Amino acid sequence: MSDALVLWDARNSNRFLQRFIEDFKAELTRFSLKVRFVTLSNVTSLEEDQIKPSMRGLLDLIHVESPLHLITFGSKPNSLASLISPALRCKLHTNLLPEWLEGEPHHSTIAKLASYIHKNEEWGDGSELKDYFYPQFTSKAVNAIVFFKEDDFSNVIEEHAIAHNIAYQSISLKSFLPPAVQLLHKVGILVVSSNSANQGDIIELANGYGLPVLLISPEMRNFGIREGENGWVVSTTQQIQYTNYLKNWQCMSQNVREMISQYCRYSQSTQSGVRCYCSSLGYPEKLELKDFKLRG
Image 1 (cartoon, one colour):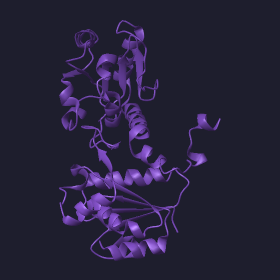
Image 2 (tube, rainbow, N blue to C red; image 1 turned 180 degrees about the horizontal axis):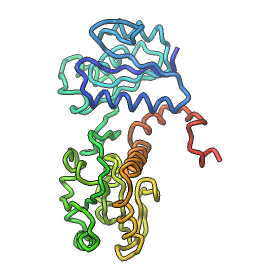
Image 3 (cartoon, rainbow, N blue to C red; image 1 turned 135 degrees about the vertical axis):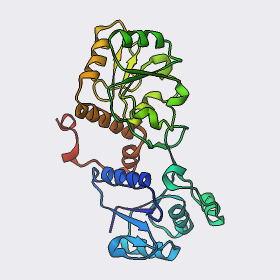
């Protein structure tokens, strides 16, 4: 018996979907629940956690496992689960994945019918508003900074970077939005003013990429930045802290920058990603995995 049964489609899955499932599986291990992952496959082998895509096969699995939650990812698992939902005694969570995770969707009659029966949670890459955000690509954590041409402080940021020999990229806000594949190989930290950060979920998007944010906020509003974890806040570019933060980033080892990048992705996951989704199931986090500060 499981607290949660997770069903996803492994047939023709790409590396992005496999990474997503692995991240989801790793996050669930942080919580006090028993979970089983089963894939749709061309053969049925419960010993190897595989079943053929059929309503009967899924019902038999649920009868054996008796989960409290059935969680499905992808159009085919969602359709099967929705169609049998009237017979379920567990709570159903269906999840609509973007095309880059699942592949080109198949608009079948069954899929359309299933969508009317049960509402899907929607996952996106940050390019548009969805229920949850999962980034397609992540930063290489290099030492160059990036800022927006439209930013009120863009000229000052550029002049400062040149004066202090700091590698930088000046880009349009539009080119920062997903997909920003090449960009992430070239920059490691976003410098942005509070005016620009207030336009959409820029800080959350940057953190999802793995980019820490140096926020220039005259009013010292942090916009969700936790000092030293997913970024830093200064009131002006004239502060010595502003220069020190950028110089420190330039001088850090690659391993340290990668560690900060992971903190940023963790922050975004907690706010709107995989960790947020897992927390919504209502199970407590394992005490031994909590941060030392939280345990006192």
